Image (cartoon, rainbow, N blue to C red):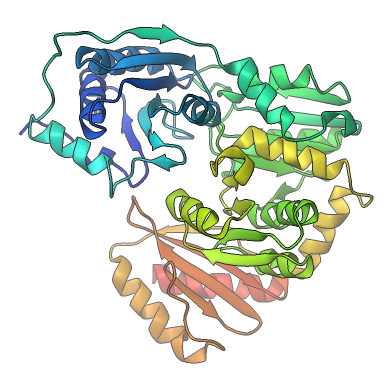
Length: 453
């Protein structure tokens, strides 16, 4: 067996520190392993994000594929959703070199079997890991594969814009922060066809050193500047993308960061108006604002397990138009059930162009009724013992039986919470809400004291 840090093989992708945990040699092996797992497809889409190590890792990955006889379409610099688009429209599997929102020293791989299905820790990633560990990779083929370069940026943007009637977009001034990631060039192309939208550009240049702020908009320090600038510079809205572009976040006119729960409810309202009575999938962590909004609009709310594989499968099963997760991942029937930042923005723009009530007023009304903690992560030594403690403490006090769909969900009357373990780290993730801000703060601290006690 070779020396390999197997912790880099995650539930949904591969993520590793470059070059200590993953380097070009490993990238080539992953290419060979991917080809073997998919029984040597005729062609594979390959892309990369803007990280400093991205080009050399992509080139090594391509070598692994073509050496075993697989042809490659190289789309090079690509957001994750544009990569998904390329796989769907070419009806091909693919690998993109990306570490999503992780710090600059990371590299990684997201792997598509057939859109919307990605390789996972349960199917595909574990097999590739075993091939590498056991030196069970395919040898060089007698015929070397070819490499075709395709630029899909304009084609992708045109498709995204075709999802709405862009002639009906109202006048907006929008601060747009792409975190020196992949979305800047795509937003540049989109802006040329959205003449009524004035974009205030924030960090649209691709720079793998991420010189302005970190890549995860869920961390307050990474959104501090846009939250300050939107109200002070008189914008109608602020939007943020993570570096690979599969997540989307909003700042309102008052500078408030809008939770994924509220965004899911808002987009659900939009889709139910377009498709009356439709089903909407949302993750079990979400605030009551989501199912209550869906029901009030005449839609069908479907709570579901967290994670893209579970959301997509449920959307397909129920023929749902939209799925939302509180972490900023949004999935659409008209985008192959995949998560996408740019499509989410375009749909939000369409929604905002059709409503009479100011967006910030909608947020005011939600904030007055729904008081949520946001997701709070705690490192724990023994996940199962902490879950047992919480069940012992609250299980007899719930107003309905504990929901065990994903972690534990406790309905306590005037407050509720979901607690679930991370798929990849020794973390417990808490999402709590209450009928008042005071109860929320009190119960949040109470539950955290048990978790960390």
